[in-house]
Length: 86
Image (tube, rainbow, N blue to C red):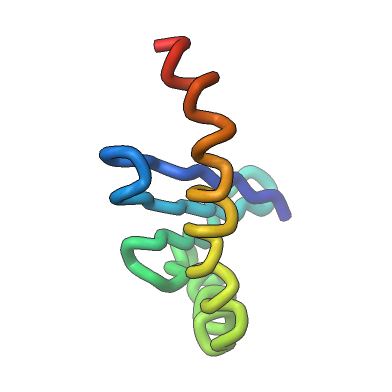
């Protein structure tokens, strides 16, 4: 398994979108999007994984909290570096 996550900031920290994509053997299987608020399976196996993860309230709460703990928490540290390079 491999995953890639990213924070998308719109208008500073007013609107933040947190996206995590999960891959196995180079194939994207599952995606979490904070705008949707749940995991979405992109393959038949990914649908089973997403159903399992979506049935766990603690896992969903952990993912939903990541908008604040991962994105907004790191915004102040990363913004000067990223914005100045445009």
